[in-house]
Image 1 (spheres, rainbow, N blue to C red):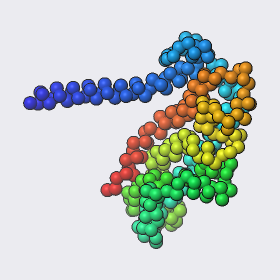
Image 2 (cartoon, rainbow, N blue to C red):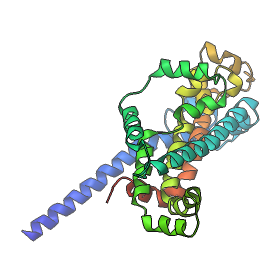
Image 3 (cartoon, rainbow, N blue to C red):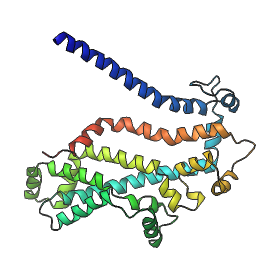
Length: 291
């Protein structure tokens, strides 16, 4: 019986590995094709419907991108908004989650119920747009940061993590004369590196990939983010005409440009992830279970 179970377990493992490899291959092939196409000439892209390695590696498309102010400006805008937005969102999430983790806080239950309410119901696109407009944030980079400053789901996980920290550490610090702010800065934050790293990555990916917010709130094409620029150039319309006019049509590498701009829009997050991976699983699990 044990032999049969052992054989069955091995067969299951083999099928599982084959299935996961197949899914990984299906996911990676389009990415590899786009990356290969970004280093291929326009003629090769037109002649070969699918390839994973170009016959001749050329960097003309990337030279064109970084030599054109439109792309450099959009890339700088996206990097800047992502860095500032991640710092603001993580900071607000931590400073709201910490007091909510204290049962002695007056009105704590009411605030938590309001946070949970936003997980189920939201104002919707039009009311949110009206709020952003009435606050004077249209065509402002803050419109890409403040409306999504605190994710309620992330807030609850961080709050649960803070509740799991030993109260004895905080009490000892306060006996030594530390204030609540000092406890938070000197005791809580150093112990929270895994969860800070995890949700910094979550927030950064969300801001970097955000397409709807700049589309709704940014009318000035000079302030477009990389994601909006990718959309406008891969599916041009009347709104993108003023940007396309800034490009030299005689040198415009249409298909290779689409591939290269997608690679540039994807690569930064892929490069950041390995440095945060060691904190990733620990950070997600440590705040999701209450002992």
